[in-house]
Length: 116
Ligand SMILES: [Zn+2]
Figure: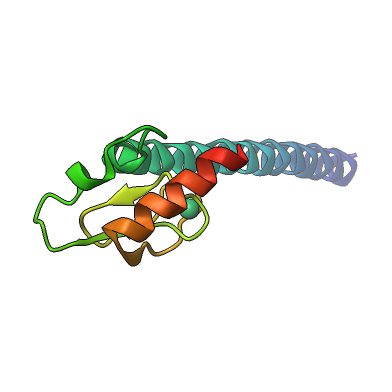
C-alpha cells in the first residue's frame, strides 16, 4: 500500500515536471521568437532613421549634394536615388555606396527615374 502510494506520487510528480518543462520550453521559444524580430525591426528602424536623408528625390539637384565640392558623390549601384556625399551603405539594399562623379550620379539618377 505504501509503495503504491509512493509510485503514484512519483508518477504525479513526473507528470508535473513534464508539464512544467513543456510550459517552460514553449514559454522560452515564444519569448525567443518574439524577441528576435523585435530586435531586427529595432535595428532596421534605427538604420532607417540614420540614413533616410541619403534617399534623394528624383528631381533633387545632384550638384547641391556634393557639399564638400570635391566633384564626387557616393551612390548605390542598385538604388540610384540613394546618394550621399560621404561613404556609407545603402539603407535599401545594404550595399556599399560607390564613389561616382557628380555627373555620373546625375546620369544614373536620370536613367533610374525614367525606368520607374
Ligand atoms: Zn541600394
